Amino acid sequence: MHILIVDDEINIRESLKMILEQEGYEVSCAENGLSAQRMLEVAPYDAGIFDLKMPGMDGLELLKWLKETGLDLPVIMISAFGQVEDAVSALKNGAEDYITKPFEPDLLIEKLKLWDSMHNLEDNFKSGRNLEDDFYFLGKGPEAEKLYTRMKRVARTQSNVLITGESGVGKEVSARLIHDWSEQKDAPFVALNVGGVPENLLESELFGYEQGAFTGADKMKQGLLETASGGSLFLDEIGEMPLNLQVKLLRVLQDRSFRRLGGLKDLTIDSRIITATNRNLEEMVQDGSFREDLYYRLNVARLAIPPLRSRMDDLPRLTGFLLEKLNRKMDMHVETLSREAWEKLNAYSFPGNIRELENLLERAMIFAEGDVLSAEELELSDINVTKAQIPEGFSTDGGRTLKEQEKDSILAALHRWEGNRSHAAKELGISRRTIINKIKEYGLDE
Image 1 (cartoon, rainbow, N blue to C red):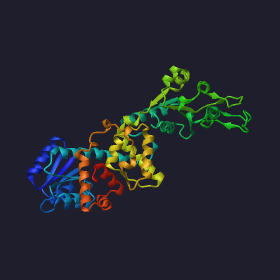
Image 2 (cartoon, helix red, strand yellow):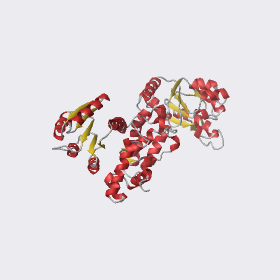
Image 3 (cartoon, rainbow, N blue to C red):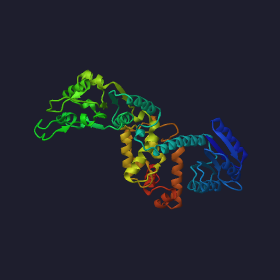
Image 4 (cartoon, rainbow, N blue to C red):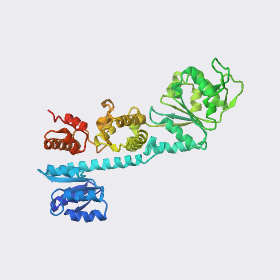
């Protein structure tokens, strides 16, 4: 991370440079705004630390110049005590944050680490928004890449596949990808949720029936085994299949043939069988609720999809991908999430996995008041929040990094507008509902 320090006091410039270089940052210095302008025109920087009051071009003017030229540079403004109004003006003109002199170097380092973390998060979020293929529903982190490699190898074969994982991790998406990457990609992909079909209808759904096979069978019907001919048949929740049908499915896998209900002729099956479950089939084999011979027939190529909570590196990219998908579906233009919303997401355990992430984003978008989703709009339950899961660089404990500065800015805005919440919210660029929630959170109405 390359940081540009702009301050007319050489002692401050040099001491900050030394402190930040000890933390591993690359640092350049400028003694005034005009000098900083020349440096910014010829070299890229990742962050800036600007003194508010300097002779010639001050920090606020330099900030306005950055905005006019379209240079995307996150800036921390350094202000002296009593310059809070100027600092708030700097925030309105694009500064990310401000600190007042004298300050502890640790506070500055905390803010830079937070920025670095947020910068990486935003990069991954934006990359997710640019993806259109459901391939990325599973993510693009190291764990996901390993999974894709295994799936592509499986796709080159005709072997049966067993996909395991919790509800909502993307088992059907995985099955579709295996099909799409196979030589049979132009043939049908047929999916059936075994647990969602009544037992008395499941057999006819799979095998079909001949005319007159039973009361009401007034014409022949193909089953899904035929419908999927040449392609892939995906049986989700295979652990819910009753034992009598497990026997018949085993016969299909052994002989590669079947009969329709009421039929006399064997029909050949040439489709791949992909099954999935969120249950422990090994335990079911032990207790006798799942046939051991069928288990071995299905468990040729096994893919275990990890839960979202074990690969949170994928969260920003997945969120970006799902947000853009929902924008198209709902004809909306939600751009991103607030910093507090990201903190909430990163601290959440996602018992419902990716499906839950998609559902909570859709719910938040329905009630969103602007183009940035707030923490309140996400409506996450505290039951599934684990503080230990918060990544380095985020603060949810009311520390100086985020909460105190936010509280001070809200309090200052309320004082300027004599307590008028609507005007204060407009000045701060947030909704009236958000400022009311923040006033309650910080006890400012007491």
